[in-house]
Length: 100
Image 1: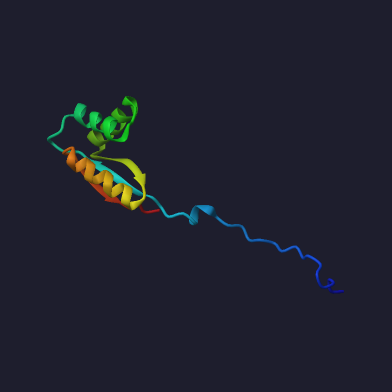
Image 2 (image 1 turned 90 degrees about the vertical axis):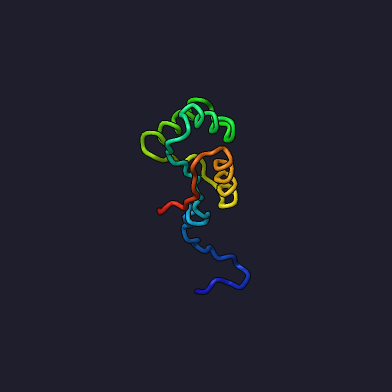
């Protein structure tokens, strides 16, 4: 028997993976270079990003040992600004969109 007109019918809604609704963030990558001292790189990360000394040193050591470190993530515009700032501090930096 059909439901009378005006009677609410329960509809099953599909599951939505919310992680696919947001765009993957861009990354600012700082590269190792033969010019800047480790203490200076740490200083830049503390000053520009506001990172605590421990985090700034960890990122600096990653740059030193692995040749690169992702130092910030966010929208393309934010990461372009961060890359430009790193260049102004004399660090080598690039903008990347990570592969997932």
